[in-house]
Image (tube, one colour):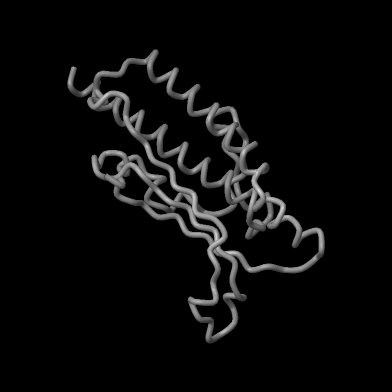
Length: 171
């Protein structure tokens, strides 16, 4: 019985980590020029949302289910910065400007993840899917989307930097 609940808790952790990757990809795709072509990144259709994965976020800590095993780590930040060409030498960190910082925090409804059942897990996946679809729309409504896209329309090249990091909860 304990093995089944541990396996179920691990499945929920995998769903959360998949959501984190998709959420970060949605934000980055709406802001930053993709580092490669769409053929370079695969597009998994998790959460019934086919978002190409172009930014290599599967290597980040939030992409691993173990991230959600730690009781103190249920938050991550995504920072989008504008700065000089990284290929240039003598680039000062102070010349990089923070454009946006997105913080995602999870608060479990049930303190004991083993108390969930399959029906609750299906509901969780549906709710997370709705949040991703809402995020997809919301990222395009904010002024930063127009600012980031204006460079493409003008044909100018901006040099973007992004960083995903795990955070301890604020309290």
